[in-house]
Image (cartoon, rainbow, N blue to C red):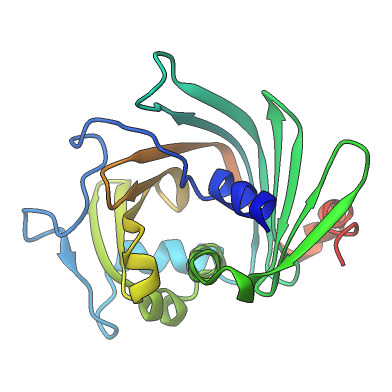
Length: 227
């Protein structure tokens, strides 16, 4: 279980990192255009993003940076992320080491370089379960699911937008202050996770594109080793 906790911390940026507060401020923001949304009032710009992702998968290359307080140099990693609605979320780190993770709504699985697979039920990690459900809601374009896990804030200017999420559930609020997604047009290009102690991790999404159902077959092999 301790090893799985480490994997999840890597996946969802729980490891300590510290960035300037101006780089990833948590909502509520100062201006009225960046207000909290209600379940019945969704800005057209956000609706376009959700509709764009709804029923589709997602592929993106990722670059992650963590500036750990105890280290002089930032920690950097890179890899790729794939989301398929019927399969879950797959993430493969390529540098500085190889690591594969497969996350569904019920389990987290890890495969090492020797092909060994280990599995842990999400029910044993309630904080991770809440985050997984929240992220899957974002990637699947489900407004109802998103609003049930977070207070939602949104702002947009031209083709750029920010989506701020502050957790509702008590377990998550003890660790996470907010999650911020930044995008251009319909694409998510940057993800921030700020912990309650002020630590922050940033993921950059490179070349993101949605995967229509007819494309899923090309990515199935990344999910076939899961149980």
